[in-house]
Image (cartoon, rainbow, N blue to C red; front, side):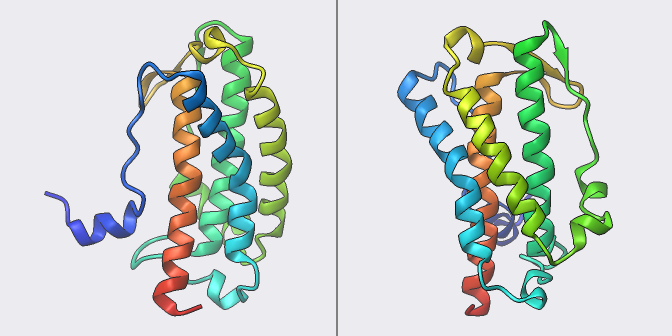
Length: 179
């Protein structure tokens, strides 16, 4: 059984749940969320000191710097997966160990500027691409060996949520510490 207090810290916007049968308006909203995620994250971390950025968002959790750097890693993978799913039939995702990646020296560094820059540029391209898709493009399948079958639509929803999820980790930490 899960601990509700821990779940509130781990999932401050709730756990991800995909919507089936999404329409154009819902997709446009998710794409807008992806478009705004880099600026939202940059605004949340603006002015934080290295010590603050090296503060975990919860006991046993990643530091705020790791959260930002993880977003760059994760969203880069999602962007590339989107492109592969459109370009190739029956694309199979190459999974990665996000916990291990979050331990690399570039992921634990308090200087999150490179990750913010990466998110800004990559999201601009990703959003430009997503806004050209039709229903058939969003229905394109991809297979994640650990999560099973998914579609570009599902991936779009996941990463709209993912940006909100990690923005809430940062906002919650700032509020808790009075920053």
